Length: 306
Length: 293
Image (tube, rainbow over all chains, first blue to last red; front, side):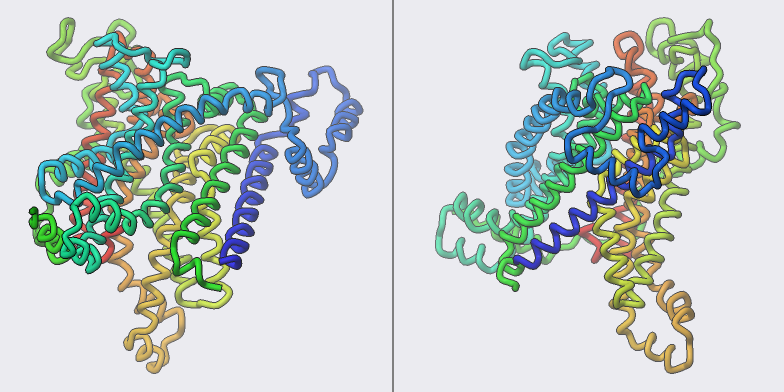
């Protein structure tokens, strides 16, 4: 188990290294920053001084080293558009993204798990077909379009809910549902198939023969064992929420990190794009690591291996 | 006391759905129509997909007040015909998925083949690469690419390849490990075939069904991915009529002109649903053991 965790940890560090190199290289490829920063009347000598001052005359590996050192100290550069440190902007915005993600996770747990479990238990009934139809639809509906459809129905036609921005608790309902929808479809499918495998097992039959109440058989004996693959899905769920948040924040003008990065793309605000990408990638890699460790802990085959 | 649930559970283990010889008709017709539209777009589309007439802006689709018969699905804010843009949009969706999946499938399969066949440090290295690639967030890479280079068809393809190659590499490596142990490989070796001949003449043909199944299952995913990237402004750039671009175009006009956004969304939904149903059918026919994919 320890060996596994150390290996996994090293792999995450390599992943983060790759991300930082990619970000560094792509931003350098995008053009000479001096050309953008220097005033038109700058002389050859001025540019040389400026280049030396910014360290841009040094070899690439050294520049990369400076980039990483500064990032680790929290210096990600200034936003071109807002003329403020990139980190400050991110710290202002991440709360909104987490709020939205939190609600989506809640929707997923409350809807997907019970429906998935009972769709498996009542295989072939109307509930099962409804759940499967929903899952199939969930994978085919583009998230940004579903968001617009909800805006049209609940905002424009029915005038029930606000359709953009953040403020009252009502504001979060539409983006929350849109973000939750996709994760629900995937998790429901997985819970159902995982439960079907477990329900056919000897120990579930035994629990039934013992005369245990059905509810206890389902949740205590079957679901506990079916939950293992579902844990792995938590990582995928996070991916879905991360990708989704970028799209859904754009649709509903929800002022989180996703909207920040898309606005930064529009205004060519490199430092912001770079910082948000680094920040979200670090979270993404971190969550993947945590989920794998949790999985190893839950799975005795890995837990007891040297 | 209720017994049926136990019986149902038994069925769950024993009962695979009966194999269907013919593909499901409705999805097949829809996908065929789509390919038809994509190939013959210039002949089928009644108007230009990128040029509109400003005198015919925001005309609603047939059935609504103010509709015009020469624009059955209405027009957008630049007076471009929605139907024509939808027809041309099918081209974008299909070409992104065909080009993207062909590239990523070939590349991923080749890497998987090398890893599985050669083993040793090559395998370790390549499979580590797969793990790392899987742990990087794809949509962020797309965002970054679009800032550095202008948004383009090529960017979308890069993102597709980047996101999907690991699944082909994993699948093919696993299959190759199995095939390598088979007698026909040993016999080919005895007959004096080189490693290259064994890989490409004897192993690759046996990999084809699984690769094909995975590719079919990916088509719908790639179409949604392209649309999402284009919607965000980091995929296919406007005015090219990608369905994602169209949804984005109508976003600000959802109150006055819902059709601009809603119709292309329906096109995506119907296409992807049909492709997924067909994909499941292909999988069941060719390779039922891939059920978990």
